[in-house]
Every structure is written in C-alpha cells, then in structure tokens.
Amino acid sequence: MRIAAVQHAVPTRRITNDWILERIREYNRPRMTSLQFEATEQRVRQMLESSGTEVRYRLNKGEKAFDFGVEAATLALDAASVRPQDVDLLIYAGVVRGWLEPATANLFQGALGMANATCFDILDACASWLRALQVAHSYLRSGISRCAMIVNCEHVFSDCYECWDLSAEGAATCRSAIYTLGDASTATVLVKEPSDDDFYFTFKNFGEHFSLCMVPLSNVHEFAALPASDHYAPMKLFSSSRELFRITVDKIIDTFESDPNLRSQRYDIGFGHQASEKASKLIARKLGLPYDDYFTTHREYGNTVAASVPLGMSLALRDGRLKRGDRVLVIVGSAGITVGFAAFTF
Image (cartoon, rainbow, N blue to C red; front, top):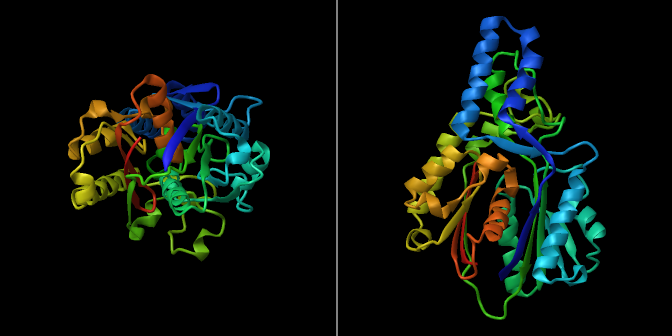
C-alpha cells in the first residue's frame, strides 16, 4: 500500500483563546459569585495555556461541515491523479456525524461520484483514522481493493458540543477540554502497490478507563453505571482530562518500549494525536524522538480529534517536512483508552 495523497480543509472562522474566555464571562458572571467566577475563569485560562492551545477554526455563517469534507476529498483525488470511479473502498473515519445510521460514508460516496466504492464507517474516538488506515491496508494487501479513500469531517466546535455554563460544581474540570477543540476535514488516498510494503500496526486497549472521556447519548445509563450527574449530559463532551492524559501517556510509553518492531527503528518524522502540545512534547521526549522531528498542529489548529494525524501529514507535505522515502511513526492515544502505532515508509 502507498499513501498517494493526504489533503485537508478547514473552515474560515478563526477562534482565539480571548474569544473563548469572553464567552465564558458572558455566560457565567451572572450565575456566580465574584470569587467563583474568578476561580473558574482562571482554571480555564490555565488549562488553555497548559495544553498550548492558541487558535482553532470553526464553521462560519453559511458554511457546512460536509462541504469541507468534499473539498478535502476533491483535493486528495487531484493530488493523487485518481478519478472518483477508480476508488473501490471508501471509509468515513470521523467522530462527528449527522446521524447514527446509515454510515456517513454513504453520503460522501454519492456526493463524490464513487459509484464503484463499497463504503462504511469506522469509529474509535481519536484513533479512528489510524484504525481505518489499518483496515484499508488489509483490503489493499489482500487484493479485495485497489484504491481506497479515508475521509473525516471533524467539525466538533458547534452548538451541539459547546458548553458555556460552568456554574455547576466541577463543570470547569470536566468541560474545559471542549475549548481546545478545532474543526478540520481530511482525505487520504491509498493505492495498492505491486510489491509488498513495510507498514506495521499495533493497537492496545484499556477498556476499564472508558468513562474518562465520552460524548454520551440519551440512553447512556442503560449501558454503564455512571453517576447521576449533569456532567454526562447527552451530546456534551465529558473529559477527566488530567487523569486521561496521565494514563494514556503511560500506556503509550509502555506499548512502545515493549514492542521491538517500534523500538528498533529510526524515524525521520513523527505524527500523533494532538490532544495537547504539552502531551506531545512529553511523549516525544519519553520515546527519544527529537521534538523538531515530531510534527505538531495543536497550537495553530487545536485538538482536531481523529483528523489530527492526517491534518499534520497534509501540512507537513505542504511545508516540505514530509518527503517520499521518509520513515514515519504515527502515535495515537484516545478515549477508550485506545493506544495505536503505525510505522511505514512514506
């Protein structure tokens, strides 16, 4: 398998930390005492500074998430010199979607004119793109498919996911991660190669920590014994960020160090899920990767969920940081907890 193209598209509205803090002031000053408000504002400010978030993008008036997914896919097809009818496998690997069924991939298959593509969704939180890459690799390597596309549309910073009211006890702790989220769509074109490739994948799961980060549905309590709390409100992001980061970083390091296939290789560039710049720096240092060789996007785009890795690859290609023949390491830690790695020659 060869990654023939990776492209991205982002909406036009640029959101800064100052804008976030101003919205928090508008919603919470009337609902809190002065001391409560000052403590809440300071907590959110410190969280943004600690995670390294500065800018993120969101949909502007008149913009639709779907349009940016189509734009990214069209750019990727052009960059790969692939016609829509040549794609025979289409995977949607975004967390964000407009419905639970049918597969969102059907929407893009029809819009892009990929009449010969079988299509389905893969959902594994921020590890979704890497999971899709592994599945596409299996299809291409076995000969089931010859040309595949992975598309995602992470437009998470919408009214459905925003939560400005932090007046409830503990709300600033479990909701603050939402303010780091940014919008991005990506598309990846993959083609079968006549010779074998050197892609290596490994995943580990630690399901006992599933409740540390989630976007619940209205029937969440029919599946898990969670505390009766407004923190688990349907379609609102809940995250115990500090505990999630601490455990996930430890699991990433343990998985890497215990895997001789990963540990023994030299890498020219690394890409990872961009939950925070602080976590990225820590992971790079612990794994012995020079930070200059670890491509990050969080400061300029925020946490773009499952789009983080392909967004980074697209930007690195644009900037000349990712070149053919480079040895690439992909590192993903996501809610679940899922830890995933991929190593390959680009």
